[in-house]
Image 1 (cartoon, rainbow, N blue to C red):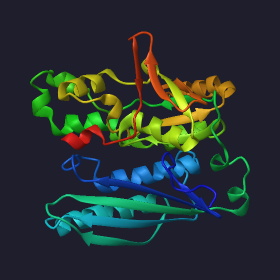
Image 2: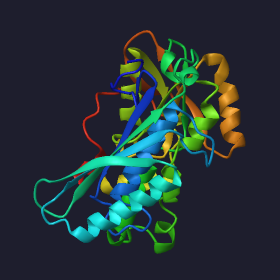
Image 3: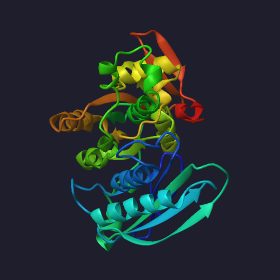
Image 4: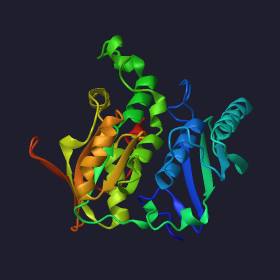
Length: 317
């Protein structure tokens, strides 16, 4: 096993096969047009595959298969199952994936359900043995951490879609409509493709937000990190939604953003590439030999330690 499953690792490489998964549940996703547990799980799996095997826009992962695992509440209807399976069949066909099996179980009460997608990509021998493959590289002290995209956007978008009436008590409808973002931007494969030549390691921001992703990445590297708080890209509506609900936007579901570790001398080049492609990106920190995970700011006179991932802020809703 070249790269095994661990905190901060989004894929496994065994011999010549990359294995990834993506999972999502239906909580907060019901009645949202264009996004469901199945589609989000699928996008997350594609995101993870792109971190191991970066793909150009519209490129299909050749020699790849897909398995589907559904866990259903006892009141989940056949109509919902059929709709999600039809969607996954369409998504798989669009990416040239062969569905080879899966599992469906009823577990617990209620009408919520979860979807887990497993993708396997078989590589050519030269691809599997590439000494420059990302799974062979190691983060070193003084490497820089770049964040592409902005934090907490998917979480805040889901809150906006589910709690418009509550938000309207403070914000004007015209402003609420500007909150959140296009659901299609949860796909980070283009960001990974741009970083392919510079990246030492990549890790998607997901459950637990940017704080959880930073902790996981440093845990995998067995290093510490020094983060500059004000360098973390975040949109003002995300801050305002989080303040309204009394939650931490840096611990909020962040699917759609990416962390990239690069050598110090490659950071500016990668930033220029992201900016040229129209992505928000920033150097947010530097890896350290000391194991402390520190977020500091001279501007806000703060210094705090990132603790292990507990739960996403959405878990309180």
